[in-house]
Image 1 (cartoon, rainbow, N blue to C red):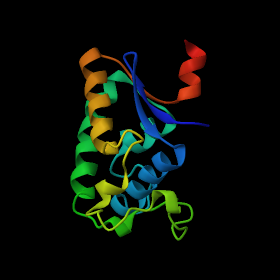
Image 2: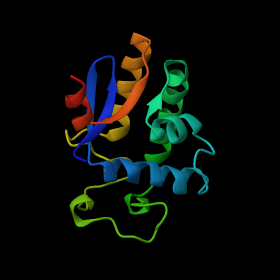
Image 3: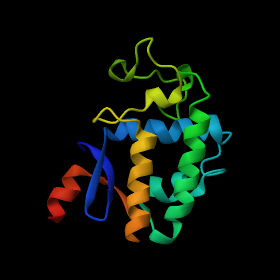
Length: 146
């Protein structure tokens, strides 16, 4: 699969590789949820990870994303987890950041050079404003559905 991103209200918010998005969820699980997937953030970790947040759950997803962002901003970049099922697996070299990373937020940059959590926040806000669901989709899926 090529790029993945968030799709809502006919707008595409590209994240980048599926592996980076999985790493984001893995880091949330192991660093913020005591290793129990969805313990604190059921909408982000359950609904969004599964592919869709229905419009009724979007406001909760916005709040959960804000909490994740605040907590990641206080954690060192070395705490990035590549894969929660194999937490000792190293982060691939193309995703390792130079000494400029100050916190975990810096580890999750989209293919557009934007913080993943900020871009997700914009996508969720747009979905909320439009009364729409938000989906995780690959660029290939979007092209096929046009």
